[in-house]
Amino acid sequence: MNVLDIQQVSKSYHKSSKKGRIPALFEVSFEVGPGQVFGLLGPNGAGKTTLIKCVLDLIRADRGRISLQGVPSTTVYCRCWVGYLPEDYVLLEYLNAEQFLHVVGQLFEVPLRERRRRIQKLLDQVGLAQRKTTKIKAYSKGMRQRLGVAQALINNPKLLILDEPNEGLDPLGRADMKALLLDLKQQGATVLISSHVLAELEHICDRAAILNEGKLLKEGTIEALTRDQSLEASFIELIQSARAQNRALAQEGQTP
Image 1: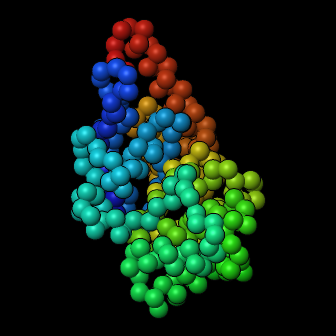
Image 2: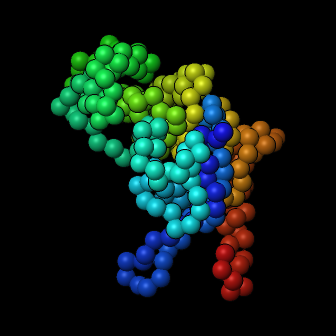
Image 3: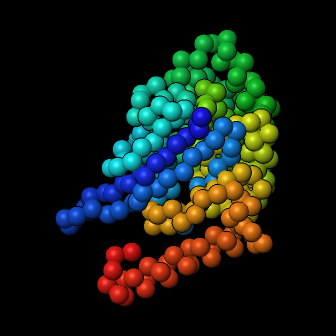
């Protein structure tokens, strides 16, 4: 059984000043199997974050079906199966890492004894065990990102969703994040990653989907997507081709 199943998902938004709607997703379909690290790729405005929010039921798709472990994602208890690190998030800076993870664990109703065990394990895993009593406000961007991954894992999720986990990180921070993601992969975690850092995803992901203007251009294994070139080169080639086709259709007066 797939951990995540997305079938024919479409979503559009109301225009703020005019009648009509702005399309964000159009009939997107793919599956994420257990133990897979799946990359969700696309330029800015491709619809990646919209799709993630649909999976999390933060917004509802207009059409299509999304299920987690075979259960519709709109089912309330499905949210307990997902760990999520958004692109923009707020940490409780007046707490230290240990205190913060206790707060998140309580929200998931993890019992105290089990919570303590998980927190120590997670802090070791993300490399923050020696800084667990340091206030979060003193953390670097890389340390905050690692703590963000730890909070997303506190509930032992069946699916971990990371939205731009490398955003704003320096080379050392990206190296730490890559090592952490490889560690999660070796442990058999199921991960959906949205990222622009394609060179690093190429060595982490098993499969990937490439979106452009809300449409799925291609989905498959990293080997099938790259062939004899890098993932970044394949990505640029696909996006440029799609945009050229859209321009040609627009000149002919057709809707892309």
